[in-house]
Length: 72
Image 1 (cartoon, rainbow, N blue to C red):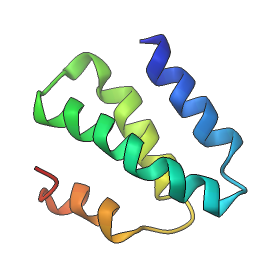
Image 2: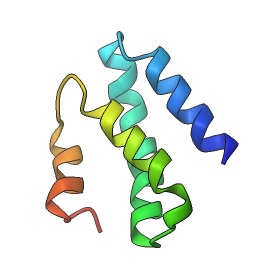
Image 3: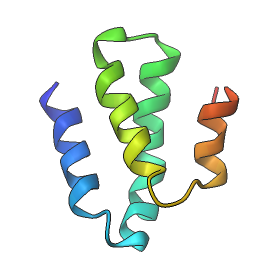
């Protein structure tokens, strides 16, 4: 989906600005959570790419919820 790729591109461009990534995280986490909750396998690649970008430099408590499976 073009929108998910656009979100990932914005995230990659902003990766050197921790405050921008922190501001984007809640929105992207909602998107990723929706994809995982609904098991929309066609978008797993984009979802996991966003997760990877969000945890590249640090892992926030909200992102730990993805790994613990408590994001639901």
